[in-house]
Length: 192
Ligand SMILES: Cc1cc2nc3c(=O)[nH]c(=O)nc-3n(C[C@H](O)[C@H](O)[C@H](O)COP(=O)(O)O)c2cc1C
Image (cartoon, rainbow, N blue to C red; front, side, top):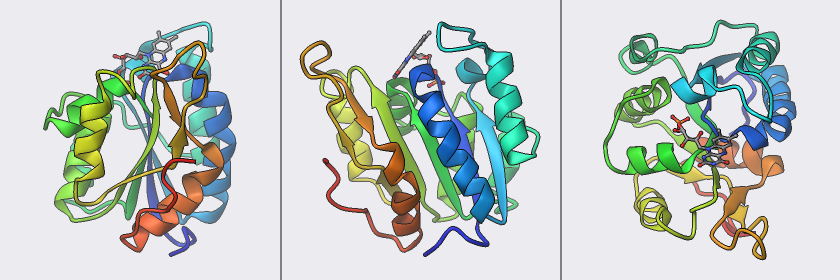
């Protein structure tokens, strides 16, 4: 199902190195969707790093989506009861957020958005980006791979020499993965 005329939740978490490849995809999604609701985790909203200042990221997201970003748990809470979106894309999704999502923890705006949205039996799409994907977090990825209404953007090892446990999703597959998720299908192959 195409993203045209769909209401998309687009959530950022603290994998800052991926933002520069995520922003062009967010821009494409904003061009096609009926509405894009931006959400940021506390880390993504507050941390300045060598990958840019939080203020710059916030400005870019608000410029692209033309919407005010949801930055609090109470701000994200209505997503469930008011059924505000058709699909929630978490891109990038940190190992931290994956671990919490897999274990029922809801202590950031992004996790609140996911919890509320999942209760409506609607899809969540995860853009994995974690240095411990093949380490401590593999069990949590396994739980989510087996969870109803959770879909992954296909991923691979991004640097097996220097970071052998790292895996990152492919930005160019975010839109196809979200379109498949709206048809209740995991896009394949999932490891690319
Ligand atoms: C510069 C920088 C880069 C980071 N990159 C990643 C990353 O690529 N993947 C990841 O899982 N965590 C990364 N982290 C750690 C997360 O930001 C940290 O675990 C944070 O608590 C995540 O919170 P969130 O999942 O609520 O956004 C990075 C942290 C910093 C400061």
